[in-house]
Length: 519
Ligand code: XMP
Image 1 (cartoon, rainbow, N blue to C red):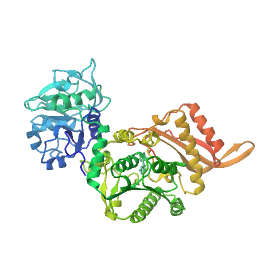
Image 2 (tube, rainbow, N blue to C red):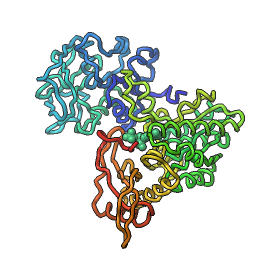
Image 3 (cartoon, protein in one colour):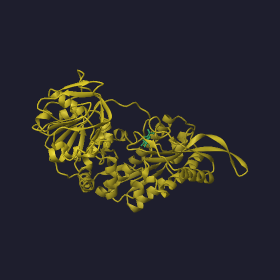
Image 4 (spheres, rainbow, N blue to C red):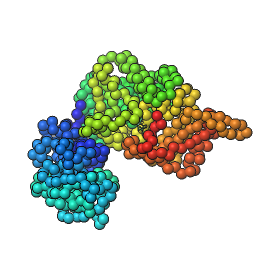
């Protein structure tokens, strides 16, 4: 299902930079639809009608070697404006006869200052008195390609912004997409509006009607099932599809018993009563506890939960006749990552659990209406669909739930203790207006008991660990620096109200070297 087939767009060719997604987001932020393709995909492209501009991303490849990532020459024959960023600039230079080398003298990492050499459409209203830009390159262009002109330099590299106005080809050595580049958005906006001359049309709220129409067209009178977890993505998917096909969407909520206190039943009621969805709640908490008995190994826990979830979902789905589609909350970053241009898979740190893998066994067609959207766009969509703020702005929560926040063996008693402590922490965050400033926060139960004293008695109970992090996308994170009074308050509330905990600690590691979750 390609929802945006006939849309005017800026195409971004991904040479493997961590920042490619950010370029796509920035372009959408300024009101223009953008898509990311790999060099391989672009070489198969036959129609360029809707493509109004092309951006070549940065990447780990180097044109100084014999073999390097490239794109077919035909791309340059389309007369579509092109902007190369970092590796993109080096590739353009190589293709048009410039010279590039890797040198200690020319490499730049971090902040650099631009020297303006010549006016250009690309840099209109961009320069300020001390224009700083963010660099990350070892290779540098030292001989200008034919028919190109220098627009700006830095102390280390002469060819920092170059242009060929006749061919509408531009290159910047720095990264305009990062916030460390002052005014970087202006470069992207100038390229998109002044050079590509594309109109500002992309607006996520206006996508709602379009998506509903497309879903109706695809699904017709068939039935769709959806695993609803109450997280943002599956909730938005369910509301969207429900708007299109009403009762032909059947949602299944599998309660693993490993969710936050009361959250699952609360979400179920909301979807059933407030949003009027056709939703079935399966209480499988006993079964999950039974299967997890005596299991301490994190990977085993994850596998057991993932497999059991799929088994239960499948069993329930089979009870419904004539289902043709499975709806999933796949997002655009998942799509970009699964077809990384370098093909290199980052080493597996943890096996994540989601409902992927279901359709193969069940012979269902996938319906993924969010697969062209970023998380913040999904939240805007959620708002226009009337999704309540508590769900729409909920922190991410891992599929295996509290099982990976109870270190060591899981028991019913431990789940209950943790739910109570976690509930106190989260409520305090909300009441102190801190919840929305934090990417993710939770309480965990550590696998040992320590001695304490309460009143005149000795206690011997569990330790609760609090974690709260800020992050952009969960890939890197820093711990949230609470004021002392807040931690004091949460700590004493937990110890005073949760039987089974006599000590509270706060995790102050960032990711890396730690991860956000403990297991
Ligand atoms: P880590 O612990 O790897 O977590 O730093 C990064 C982000 O991923 C979430 N996470 C998961 N999400 N299924 C999920 O859907 C999982 O199995 C899973 N494990 C971790 C984690 O909560 C954080 O937001």
